[in-house]
Image 1 (cartoon, rainbow, N blue to C red):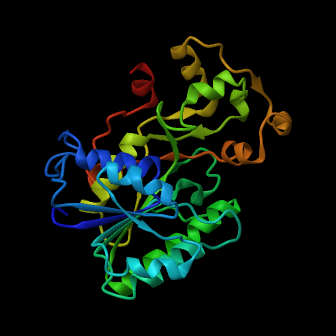
Image 2: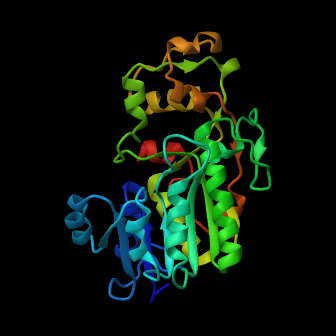
Image 3: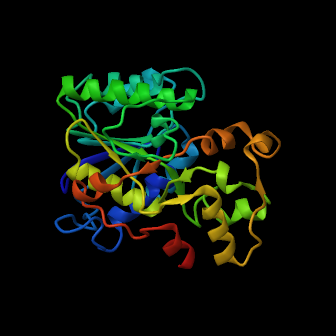
Length: 307
């Protein structure tokens, strides 16, 4: 990787954290043997963007912008042969059961020699509701929403492409991303809005990963990810959703959210919120720790909230 060209597709909040981790002070990103910093002159970072206004901020961050749109397949042809590694952080479309955006990118990358490594950011929503059971990467997918079905389609087409093209594909399944400096990622804001929680007997288990730890996991996967391998990226927290927001309130000096019954959920939660609350699973991060050797900066949400 020290002489590679890395293409980031979907270089938003997490992508920029990846860039800062690569360019910043050495901090043992993910355990022994993986540098916390890669010399900017040797690792060329490229980002696909559909917005000309994003080009200047990307250049300031030391990233080479390339204009293109995942919804315009013809604009992606310039990406062929451009990078040795790809980090794909872009979401699928908002409707349908498949992901034509990823399919268009893979067609473009296949026009010339494909990249050696491809890391894809997926979601743990592909498992559907597991009723609070422990979940490893060996569990069969059982998506309960169209959003999750699009991710299942993307994972399948990417891993099949990787086997045919000889690309080392890593799929990272990610739960809720949080960070105080991330738009929409500050848990105190939900408490301040007065959003209630389900009562304990109706509540499910929630899973999290700090945005900085996710960025570190993405970097580790680029170096250490095994071919056609799925890895769950989550912290060590084991909490029900209501207990999580009670902790947020307690450590922030805020009143705890009210508790409501599952039967009354429709009056308090949007359809998107309910789709998350209606699924419960406990995620194992053993593979992340043993194979990617990621060392979490925030092992649980408590460490971040206290910091």
